[in-house]
Amino acid sequence: MVDLEPTQFRARLDDALAVYVTAMGYPRGTEYHRAPMWTEHMTRPGWRAVGALETTNDSPGRLVGVAYGYTGSARQWWHQQVRTGMRHSGWHHDDIDAVLGDYFELTELHVLPTAQGHGLGEALLRRLLRGRTERRVLLSTPEVADEDNRAWHLYRRLGFDDVLRRFRFTGDSRPFAVLGRSLPVPDRVSPLA
Ligand SMILES: CC(C)(COP(=O)(O)OP(=O)(O)OC[C@H]1O[C@@H](n2cnc3c(N)ncnc32)[C@H](O)[C@@H]1OP(=O)(O)O)[C@@H](O)C(=O)NCCC(=O)NCCS
Image (cartoon, rainbow, N blue to C red; front, side, top):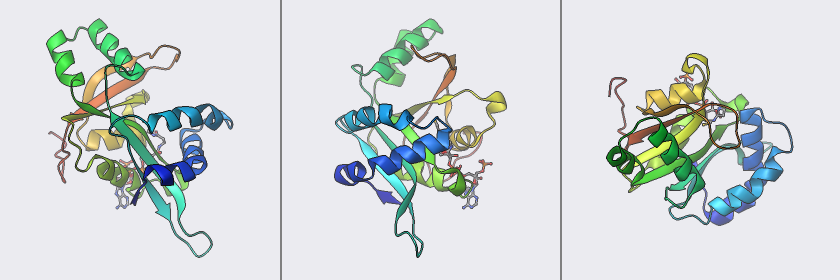
């Protein structure tokens, strides 16, 4: 598990995008659209990235997991979408300001399918959030039946609550959940916390 400084992240960008496309099951070629966006994200205040490396005799340090995020801001498209969604779903404006006033956006978190199921996702997320100064962490994840995939299990296990459900971002027909929790994340999280 390593921190990826900007130069290291840039050097591993193709590998990180390959992890993302494979983990999400997206069609090949998606990475070409994402590369400029991920590069732009690196310029945002509070950007931080972590990686999981697998070292074998054949490959010293193959990237098998990656996560990054940055400090949320009202100037960002994601923030504006979530704010609009919260307003439409009946959140009081004071509560919207409280939730969106000071947060870290978990933008990407992916582990290669062959490396999943061993706690790497949780370790990446915990490392990424360690020492953050924001009051909350927020993320969006696709809705799945019965919240039954590894991403949902992980977020619920770490105490993430609903902010929005079945929300549709402009330009994407899939329903998403926006989830959040306060920071810091304790070492052990009670399922009832
Ligand atoms: C979501 C994702 C990053 C989680 O990574 P992961 O390494 O599979 O997840 P975890 O760290 O939660 O570990 C997975 C399982 O291993 C178990 N586990 C945890 N620590 C373990 C350990 N030390 N040894 C063995 N198993 C362990 C967990 O209980 C967990 O079980 P569960 O999924 O049934 O709850 C990964 O599954 C992924 O890339 N999914 C596809 C892409 C995606 O959905 N990304 C998020 C989009 S928002």
